Each structure stands twice: as C-alpha cells, then as structure tokens.
Image (tube, rainbow, N blue to C red; front, top):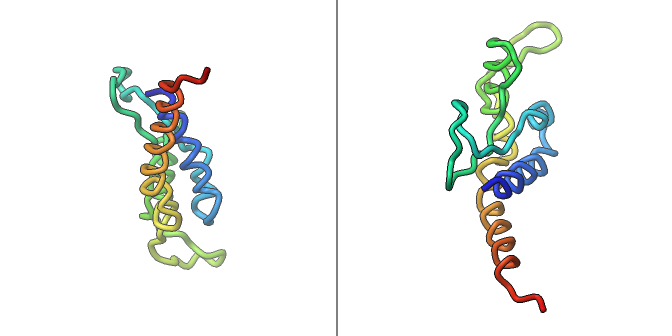
Length: 116
C-alpha cells in the first residue's frame, strides 16, 4: 500500500502542475497509509492535502484553496467570489484515482511475471 500511496501522490502532483490554485496546493499533497491517529491501514491508501505543521487558520485556508471554497480578493481589496480551487480546475484527485489503480496493477503484474 505504501507504493500505491507514492504512485498516487506523484500522479496528483503531476496533474496539479496546471492551474493557479494548483500551484499553491501542490507542495502540501501527500500520500499516506496511516490514519491521522497513527493506526496503519492494511488495504487503503489516501492522497490528500496535508495541514501538518500549519496554524489552524493556515490549515483552513489551505484546505479551502484546494477544494475551492475561499473568497480571494483583488489587489484593491475587492472580493472576487468563490473560486474553483485546485480540484475544480484540474480534477487532479478525481482523475488520478483511475491512473493510480492502473499503475499499481502494472506494478503488481511485473512482480508476478517470470522475467527469465
């Protein structure tokens, strides 16, 4: 599962290369196989935006930018309204799911093949 988390994290980060909100979100994307409480998952990998080490306000802002629920302001201070966010612009998390599963299956196939 750790390998699936690594593949998924790389795929989401690759997909986040485009989009303005995506650039700010990319460094915070992590793949993990443990719950936040520390318990290890046996058959689950999750790719999400990490808020570790951030203040409460910064963590809320980071999640909102990723999901598209923040109200950016212009340089003059005028509110611009709710944006699509990183996921709304790129669909990186949604679209990466299928390609991550395919990549993990290819890796599993390579492990079971007789390469001699």
